[in-house]
Image: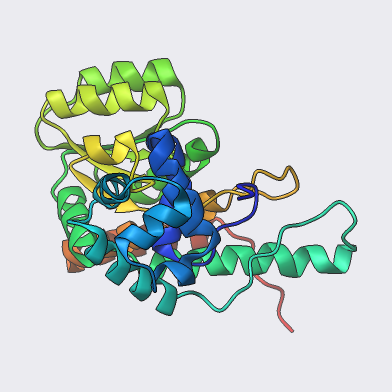
Length: 292
């Protein structure tokens, strides 16, 4: 299978594509077959899939378990549901010979498709847990490295207006030091496309040991997801092609927006007055429009 090709528009297939590195070699053979022929898998018994993938039946069972399912039957049921709810956008890669008028539609379609997929599979229970943690937080730290640092800064910009001390750490050393002074009632929002950055994992572990809550916005099968108090899964397979921007960044920004709105609703009328005062301050700094 060509792993450079975008995975089909399914959250489960996206999880498999982003979690290939965490699988054993034999399990990866099963993953490659599922990604290449997901519709065929729905018609195959565990013995037939094992034969087609060139592995043993226990390997197929371990593959399903590694994804968090009780067994092959549950895996097939979830695969069928995911394929049925796929987004109506064809993910096409931008090629070096594409005319400029094709670049816009391809980039937009890929981004819209990814956002719809994340929206359709956002876990409402986990979202409520994350909102509750943030609404009660004594302090909120946003952690992000590289592209995720942009999202962390956006989170800090949104949440400091709520009257809660909020900071963004995009430097690995500062992130680790900040985690050491956290305690109960504090919350870290850890943002990572892969969930495998060593400094991010170390900071999250330090924060948890100190008693702070950790909300991870990351790939569902990642080490960071397993470390977090609450994980908001964003399974967006990134196109390795140099022409395509990181779509996960857009999805992460949208999740931060959802959290900000959710916290505002939970905090209630008192926050509305605070936000209105902030908006009025900004209005006072604007040049008035000329009269017609």
